[in-house]
Length: 85
Image (tube, rainbow, N blue to C red; front, side, top):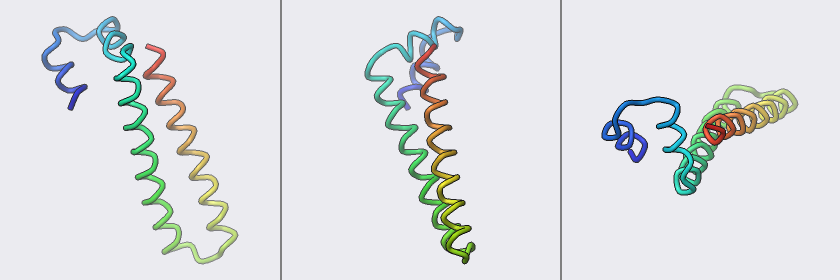
């Protein structure tokens, strides 16, 4: 909601505008919380699907480890892209 308000009521969008939006410390904290929450939500969903449909313990563990690595990489990449503006 905060990002939407800044985009809608702020004027034309360009690199300078995006850089100003994400340069504030409170916005960095907010985006960090949102990205971590999204990754956690994805982990819970994938974990439940794996627990329901993958019955071999070794395969399930491998899939869960790969999922955790993938989600951490995606979250790190998202933070790097947003905070490097």
